Amino acid sequence: MFPWCFTISAFASDIGNALKRVQGLTFGEEIGQGSICRVYQATCPVSHERFAVKTIPLPKPVCQRAEVLQRAAREAAAARVLSDLVPHPDEIVRHFACVYDEGEDAIKMVMELCRGPCLSKLRSQANSGRIPESRVRKMVAAISRALGHLHDIGLLYVDLKAENVVLDPTEQDPDRVRLVDFDLCRDIPGRHVSSYDEAATAATVIASVDPTASLTISTTKVLVPNGGDDYDNSHINNDNERLWGTAEYLAFEVLQDGAAAYSTASDWWSLGILLYELLYGKAPWSGPSVDVIFHRMMNHRLMFPGPSQGGPQVSTAMQQVIRALLRYLPEMRLGSRGGAREVLAQAALSLQESSGT
Image 1 (cartoon, one colour):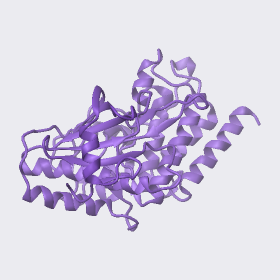
Image 2 (image 1 turned 120 degrees about the horizontal axis):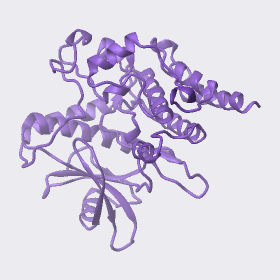
Image 3 (image 1 turned 90 degrees about the horizontal axis):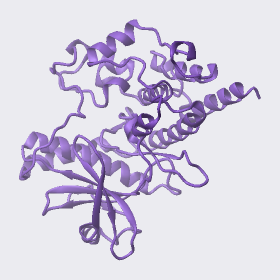
């Protein structure tokens, strides 16, 4: 079992029993997949509890195995710290256990089962490809709180996007959303609350001395390795750095200065992109490659097409929130100084202004 595997007492008394319980689950339909994993619905045949189980097969080649283990270690380290928070943040999916199944040579993460689709699917199900502002306001507030919780424990989320926010409705809140998928997280520069980077480094060492496995996997979520065809190397300061995340959501300073520029402000930029995408049906500077996205970001003004231009009706106040989140200078960006409280205060003010109260 890897050193960063864990279980909470509500799931099992120790790692060994957690593994036995995971192996005893009845797996059902696949409910999601990523570049290194598949997520299944699973049921405990004894208690009839339902879970989501992320299965991460470990590839055989050492370098690929190390990369996958790094990402699993980061997510496990984040999940373990979050699981200790009391109360657990309602805006973040709860992990119950992370175990290594030697027979399958796979990492398995057990978490809460969310009942709705991710926001990307929810948007695609709408006739217009957009979500109404009245619904988006509640969602963006929840996502802001989730990012605030992560930043408080020293964690950059890095990969905020519509696919990583899942609807999990309740009778009281039909638009409740939860943040999932922490495998690209990073330590906040200058903070050392709990080192996710150290967990990832330990995973690399483990992979280098234990390269046995039988599967190979795509790692397309690792977006821009230095020297790749889709990125101009002049934007990277360190030859060994790589950018992580999804192209349309990468912050201006990250595209300009490379991975060293990641900060909490980068997460708030991604929130601005997500907010725009949910309301307008696409990212503001989307394109076929990182180079094109960066060029458009540099040269195309942020546009808010209204109904007369085939766009939605979005309040001026909400547009101002998006503008504030998408300021090019990180230090001037909404959230960069006051964190989630600052973002939530601005969003609440915009709601009052748009309601005329």
